[in-house]
Length: 221
Image 1 (cartoon, rainbow, N blue to C red):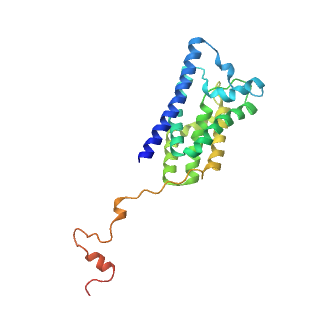
Image 2 (image 1 turned 180 degrees about the vertical axis):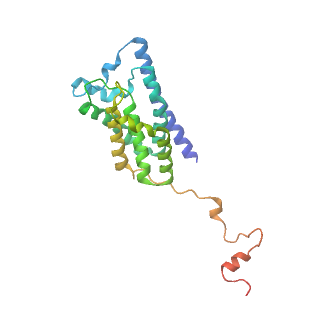
Image 3 (image 1 turned 45 degrees about the horizontal axis):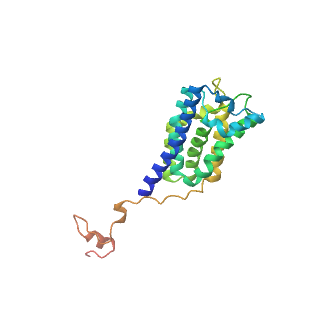
């Protein structure tokens, strides 16, 4: 229990620092009018390659950064807490892989924001729970789907100005990694309750030890 609490605290702090950096970058861009959008992913242009590394940190408006804040906190914390081994490899691969997919195949426009990362984490957490089928994984999968299942529609073309390509490639990376990494984190031991460890010589509060005698065929004949 203590290890779980420590891991949850560490996961939350790590993700909170990442979200804090996103907000700091947006505020700096807003106050100084730096036009950081130009450092987003621009498909098939050499200058747009830098966006693979920095685009998830850049947001175009308060609404944009605010809408990504809570999903990043919840999904990132859940990923790091529930699958610490997979997260060390999975999060960087989603981060870079979704941006690379956008650079190769997306529309000619600047693509920015952390939504591709969020989609990758959401689809990973949902699919890996289905594949592993242990109780903790299924529980995380159901919670994630309950909170963010509507994100599925974001992988299709829709609202102008929204990079559905980031969503699509993030989701694709999440599904791919769920299949590849599903066994990387060991299954947790099933929780046992006190009543399951009942001593053999424990008396029944009403009939004493007679029930065990009958059970063993040693009762009165």
